[in-house]
Structure formats: structure tokens, C-alpha cells
Length: 115
Length: 113
Image 1 (cartoon, rainbow over the protein chains, first blue to last red):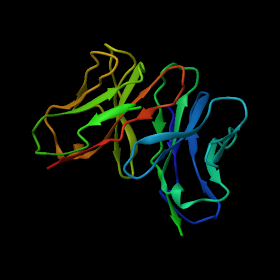
Image 2 (tube, chains in turn orange, purple):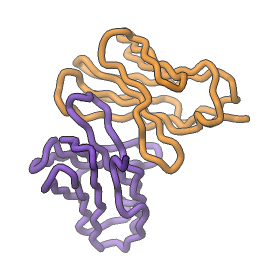
Image 3 (cartoon, each protein chain N blue to C red):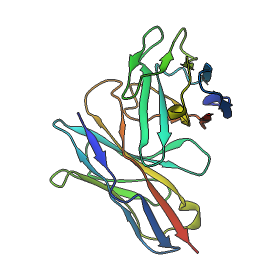
Image 4 (tube, rainbow over the protein chains, first blue to last red):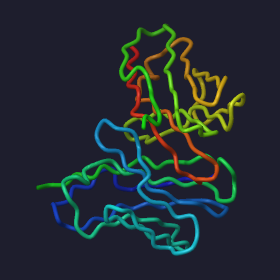
């Protein structure tokens, strides 16, 4: 079975500073990788995903993540954060090439932006 | 666009009572899921349904049951609630062609006393 580890439960960052949210996964087969974001009092929304191809994937709001197979990582980065980025971020993994494959979520990282 | 609608948004329930959390989607997705979210534990899958008429157990199914009579509805029932079922419950749906892209409702906060 696959698993996801998010080592940082909370990350405080000053506004306009860069941020990296770490995600490591474990799986014996090929995987798909995802980052979801949960804004306060809302459900989760897909932020970005890696299925195949380019190992660097980007979201529409400036976040990017890089799939690193050798380090089994999929860290999320943003060069300059904004107050509106305050949210909880979840990394998730599923086995590739399986229809309706279930996602396994990490425990989440709460990103707090300090004005 | 409504997407996923959950009800109720919040509920306080006495231990031993039964409760059904409702979930309706209007996207005609085949697959639906119920997750619970607990501080420090992230999201854990309770039950899922790959298509109408079928259901399956997730990571933490004990104490919960589901049904999938049609494509749109996926209710979650707690037959006899216990305090450890205090949590925020999220319903989600997905389409097999959109690998890993789940659409979530806004959650139902349940407190069992």
C-alpha cells in the first residue's frame, strides 16, 4: 500500500517570502501525486497534480511542485506568498493505471502567512 | 454550479443515537466517497462507491454504513453514534477519466456527546 508523509504540521511564513511544503511518499508501484488546498471552513480543492511527463507541475496561482522519483518527494513551492494563501495543504498519492483508484492523503500542513 | 451538497452542515448528537449525513452531487460522477477529517490525522476514507449499486470499505469503516441507490446520492449512516465519531465529514466525487481529481463538499461537522 502507498503512504504519504508531510513532516511539517504548521509552517509560518512572512508575506512575500518563499515557502516550501514538504511531501514524501512510499509506494511499490508507479504513482500519481497531488496537492489539495483547504481554505478555512471549506472543502478541499485540487491545487495541482502529477500524472506523467514533465516532473515540474504548476498551478494557476503561482504554486509549483516537482516530482522527484529518486527522493520519492513531491514538495510544493511558491516564490512569494500572499495573505490569501493561508490554508491547509494536503499531499495525496494514488497508484497509477488503476481506474477509480483511491487517494491516500497526508496529515496536512497548515500554512500561516504573517503580514 | 452546486457540485457536492452536504447536509447538515453541523449537528450535535447524543451518544447512542443514529444519524444520516446526506450527500448529493449534480456532476453525474460515477465514484463517490466519504472521508472524515481529524486534527493531526488528515483525511481518512470511510466508505466509497465506484458506481451506483456498489459500495466498498475504506480505511475506517467501522460504525458507519452507506448506500448508493442512484448516481447522485450517497448517504452516510451512523447507526449508534459514539464520541470517537466526533469529526468533520466530507463527501467527494470523481470521474475515472480525471485521475485523482476529487470534488469535495463543504463538510458536515458532527459532535457526539
